[in-house]
Image (cartoon, rainbow, N blue to C red; front, side, top):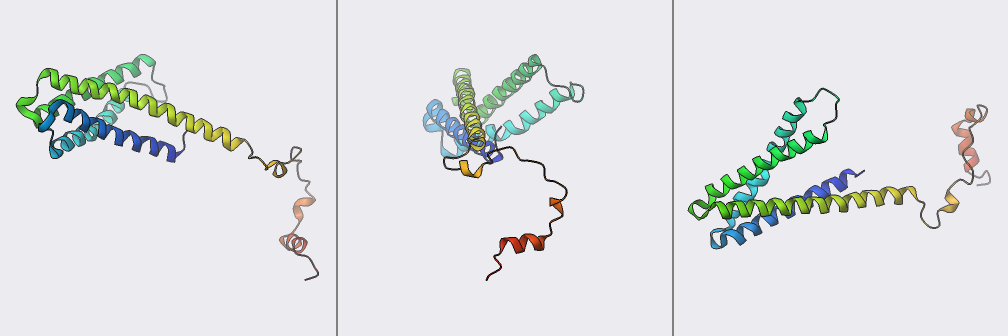
Length: 181
């Protein structure tokens, strides 16, 4: 299981790479037309609209299920398919809005398909890296560090007898501080 830091790091890296891939693909497909303002605007809108689109689709598909029920696999695939088709359409419309007559079906489709293919690969690779990091972190926390052997109990802890639990804090303090100061 990932920590919050690891999840935040994964999402941040994914967003940075998404931005880079989107802008680089626009430059590759549209050349001189891909000005800084235009390509940043398209990238910001594509990535910005992905969040509410995914959330809305997720909520719609959750509404189809009874409460406290896991989504069946076919339902997950259907949800991913609907999200992908909508995302593809949004990306193509944004290209037509920002690039006008320079956009052809081949350019818009190639750009969008390429970005989506790279997105799937990138997310899979990042997910595997961060899963491994999370697994490594869990196993390394569970294992003692070299030299910590003397800190570990040699036998399982024994229950404390009721007679020993009545020790006062003053008695503990007196036992910890030598009497011959």
